[in-house]
Image 1 (cartoon, one colour):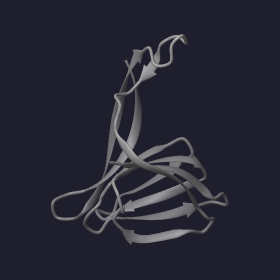
Image 2 (cartoon, helix red, strand yellow):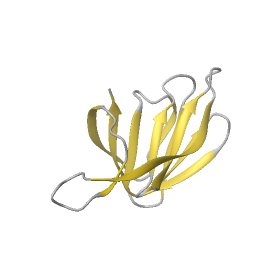
Image 3 (spheres, rainbow, N blue to C red):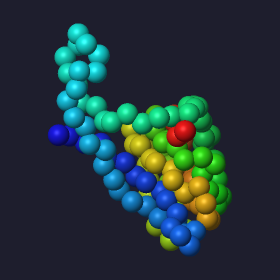
Image 4 (cartoon, rainbow, N blue to C red):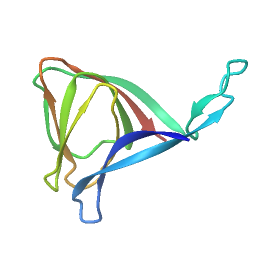
Length: 124
């Protein structure tokens, strides 16, 4: 079985946000017959999706996520900081699960000279 690693940002019961590295397991399934089987995760319901672009120099001060969502980075690089003081740099190809819908939340800062383009998938 293979897996996909992602970064989870979540809030604890005191409202302090943290990072947690997690994995999604993939299993071989007939996803699109007659194409051969491929590795898939389990299905999850989603409510909406939106493309986002964070311009060069963009900075989002402390904020909780407005909705539980996946962020899939397509271009650029940004740094997330959580309220326990930890920081993590994410780049194109990375997946981040924003789960800090309460508390202080996180900060986001675009790094470098490339806008950060993101696909955001909202959970239902």
